[in-house]
Length: 499
Image (cartoon, rainbow, N blue to C red; front, side, top):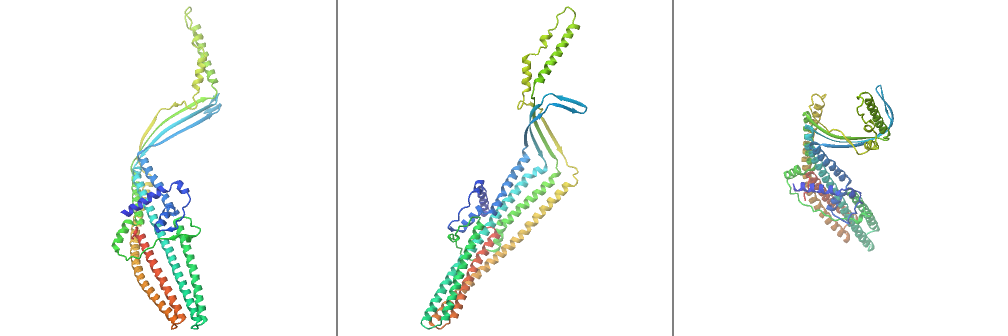
């Protein structure tokens, strides 16, 4: 569990690292002394593949927020607009309407809506399961990145060891050449031995050049795995870590238990299987009724660009009322009684004109409010052309597929752990055998050198002993790094470091 927490903390640290400004920043330089942990840390920060995996967490986290908000909070909407209508005549059905002045207007609306159904109630659980699956996938990507960096670091170290072996072989070839020349000078051998020694030295020099070039290539590949720019001279960067060969003391059952708990692929598939089960629940809940609520507020303005016709119409209305008043005075009232002051009652004053113009000045923010509206409804699906059974069938099939994928991966992990365990045991025993062979070959080379020095052995016998010693030492180096690679593969299968 502590390793799981470590992976989770590394993921969270990675998320805090990848801000937009950091993403735009320059890549760092590689330190001159590069340890394995430094390489893993730089790869965690700058590997393009891992950064792509990290990018998936942002949408997944927002998916959880969206699911909770969609379930428990209403959606809010606000809108506004402007309108213009020109003057002229309009025809509606058989009637013609004339608008003597153009109009300008504005409007606003504010509404909220909320919907509750079985599907929305299942969304928070589904979103959290999907987030857990994303986190597990990111942790798996981190473990895969670590395994790739470790493997390439070991390959580069093996190339360095081969350079050291090539340098040793060159020193042996030079010593052999000096010995052959010394014997040729005193007449104990022929010039043929000298020429053969010169050829052997040349071959050793070529082998050293090729070994150094291989180190450069493997370092460049390591920098590529880390996601950083390689220095101009990769030889300036030294790999500072060494790895001891330890006897495997784990049991297969212990490794199986660790893999069940820590293998990143298993954890990701378990989370995906949980998300698939939530998807199945969400599909089945679509048969439940849906409750919907909505409410809204609105308002508008409408202003004539030329208010003169409003003033004219008001004046004409008052004149018509005054004429009617005069008619009443002349025909309806009894003679001799006081007449109504029509000129005073229906007079059109400048104050009235100003009021009309002021009432027209409403654009853009003197809104006329519309009545508040609200709606509550419930909907029950009865027949949907078999769409819901189809969705449920698809979700159930996806959940079954996720369960089978998990079971298949569990079997594969058990196989990988078993293979890795036996590979480490075999590699460790191979090292013991290769080390004994190396010691025997070195002793044979020492004896052949002494025999050639005293004249009891031939040059070809010494050359053959050198080739045998070189092959034994190369086989030992290969066995050591095969062990380290087998252990790294076992760690990847288990899902955590074992040393």
